[in-house]
Length: 429
Ligand code: GLN
Image (cartoon, rainbow, N blue to C red):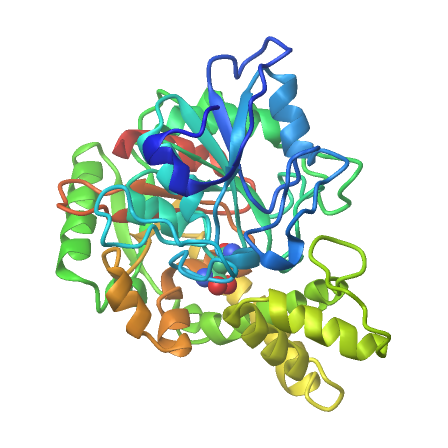
C-alpha cells in the first residue's frame, strides 16, 4: 500500500505485496500490530530498542492469512510492547496516533493503530493482540469490532511477547462477519506454539442465527461508576437485545472487581520484565558503540537510551515483584488469586451463555485528559477488561447503540465458546 493521507499516522511500516494465493480472504487487506513478525519487514512493537529488527520468518497468523489470499498492507502503531491503554505510550520517537473520530482524543490501546486503520480503511481487517484488554479497549474507543479469542486458540508463534500466560492474538474489523471469517483462518493448533493445541471451528456457521432464548448475565459490579454516555449506550444495546428475545440476569463478579487489577498488573509486569531482558543491544535491533566498558555498563546504557518511560516502570516493578523474598508475597500470590478469579467466572457461566458490560467505563479521553492521569489511575481504567483476559476467556467489543462518541459493549463467553459471541455480536450490529 502507498503511504497515503489519513492512514499514515496509524502505520509504522507500509508493505506493498500482492497476494499470490487465492482463498477465503481474497479482496480483504490486512495490517498487523507491530508486535507480530512479518518476514523482511521491520517489526519493533513500537519500541526504539527494536529499531531495525527485521524478522527472518513470518508469524503463524501471517502465514495463514497469506495462504488464504489476504493482502498484507502494513504494520500498525501500538503502545510500546503493549504497555498501555491509550496508545500514548508509544516508544521513543514514535508519535501517538489520534482517534479518527475526533483527533483531540486518543485511539485507546495498546492496539490503537489497528483500531484506527480499521475505522478509516474500507475492506480492511487488522490482526491485533491483547494481554489485558488491548483489542477490546481501542475497538470501543474507535467504534469498531474487537475480537479476542480464548487463550491458546490462535498461535502466538512470531508474536513479540508481552506476558506469555496472557497474550492472545485476535481480530479487529468493521463487521462481525469479517472477524468470524478471519478467525476461522488463523485459529487452530500449531506445532510451533505448544500452548496452541485447540481445534478450531468454522466460525461463519454462527452467523445469521437468532439470539432468542439466550441468557446474558450482567455483573453488577461492572455497571457502576460509568460515564453517562457509556451507560446510555449500554442500556440501549441491552434493550435492543431484549427486544430480540434475550433474557438478562444480574450476576456478581465481586472478586474480579476487587482483585483483577492488582493480580493482572503483578503477573503482567513480572512476565514482561523477564521478556524484556533479552533486549540488551547485542542481539536484536538498536545498539550503540561498545566503548571498551564492562558489559553491564554497556547494556544499561543501551536500555536506558532506548526504552520508553512506561517500559522502564514495568521492568522495575516486575523485577522487584519476582525477586527472592518478594516472589511469594507478590507473584505467587497473584497466581493463586488468578485461579480464584477464573473460578468466579466459571460459576457465572453456570447461569448464563455470556456476560455483558461496557468495555471501558469512560469515553475516549482527550490527550490532555489522558496525560493528567497517574500510572495507577491509568491502570484502574482497565477494570472491565482485565478479568476476562486473566481468565483467558474469549470476548468481543461491539459498538453500542445511539451514542455521540464511540462506546463499546463487551461480551464474554466461556472458554472456546467464540461461536456465541459471533451470534450475539452480529445481532447487536
Ligand atoms: N492496558 C493493559 C496494560 O497496559 C493491557 C495492555 C494489553 O492488553 N497489551 O497492560
